[in-house]
Image (cartoon, rainbow, N blue to C red; front, top):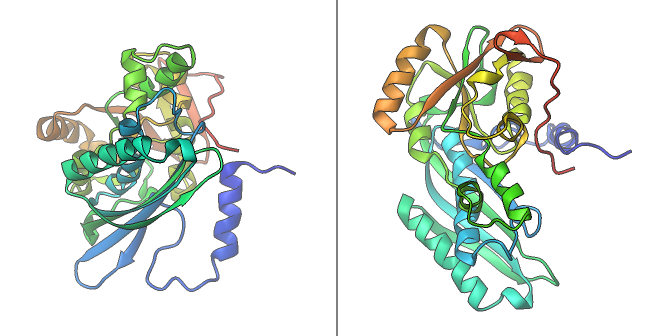
Amino acid sequence: MKKSEFSFIGDIAKMCASLPHNDFEPIGDDCTVIEIGGEEVLVATTDMLVEDVHFLRWASSAEEVGEKSLMVNLSDVAAMGATPVATLLSIALPAAAQGEWAEGFMRGYYDASARYGVALVGGDTTASTDKITINVVAIGRAHKQNIKRRSRAKVGDAICVTGKLGASSKGLVDIMFGDLNTPAAKIHRRAQARIEEGKWLGKQCEVHAMMDISDGIASDIKHIMELSKVGARIELKCIPTDYDIRYATTGGEDYELLFTVAGDKVESLIERFNEATGCEMTKIGEIVEGNNVEWLENGVPTEIELKGFTHF
């Protein structure tokens, strides 16, 4: 019987739970946390991008794919409240992408790395028969008190997001219809991570759980709910978007931050966050008891069915 992506990941976590952890935290967050002694910790994550699944070679420049490959990994580091410091890059290239395309890819990867002061410290290259496959390992550093986990949400917390949602998903639809240069399509092709925002939120003790939005909040909020053993209530009218609500809730690759904040501190935090980062922060709901997500429309429960992106 075919399993869902997240069910498969759960099976892997259970299978490997008995292996020695060797000072690494187990599967569950955007990054694993590594104790290195003292007050600092390292975090590490990896993400794979496959041609025609995560990017379309005909629709994106090689430089855009290089930048995106780095940014989707740095987003996971930012979601832990950490500062990215290094990456490892492995890439499999078919003959048609060796040479000019590969050089453009590395220019995009280098420019994004230089922008955030992130070192490239290793990796691997190999050939592929047809499609491009890219894998990046990203490493970050943080004070251990600043690390944010998905498992720390509390009943009464406000659910908040950075920026606006849905543009990347709408942009993919535009691209598939041949509109490569709409504002949404440009956002889809050039993913950006909330690195400074994640570092700032990591320092705020009233921020409890946090992760990045890669599969749409309809999926991603459930990761926080499951690990924190809570439910959620989300007001559709409060979700910040310029597009249809389904793009904003079920579409992937926004790479904004989804986090919970102590309910009595959220208004103050919104004001301080906006002033410190210049980025919007919006309260979209609250953490409640239970294990279900309830979608509201003007405060009234709705029967709308929303499911985020899944690869399987």
